[in-house]
Length: 184
Image (cartoon, helix red, strand yellow):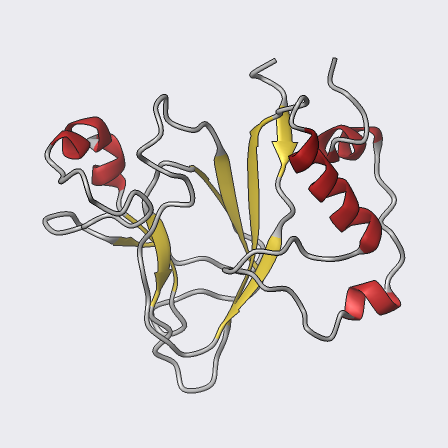
């Protein structure tokens, strides 16, 4: 069943002028490594001024060897990028960038005076149909029109979608990705 995927509840990000960072969205201390793909859909131009996606491809290519040189107490979610080139990716509205979840990545600083970076994040990982807790959280979030409770993405405090939107109609594929219907 490893070829069957589950969708994460995706998020939108608006970045006001601020600093940047590099991180992983998976715990790199887990073996075997977690399997997943992620994407960034650009909703506005992302250039040198407004910031945008940045990544460390060489670290991804050398990850196993690099990990062997790291201290045991390293942060498995935030790499030390010393000695690696951080590659900055410019994107136009509508561009979709897809990458392996083990690619260290992040948002570069927004140096503009009044522009925001707008992007939608997408992630997929192998379906865990027997993980009832995860499946239930996804279904409840969809049905109740609420963002999952996560520190990095606290959701909309106005609860606009919950109060004003209808529950999204799902295609047969959407029902499987959410977990309403089985892949089996």
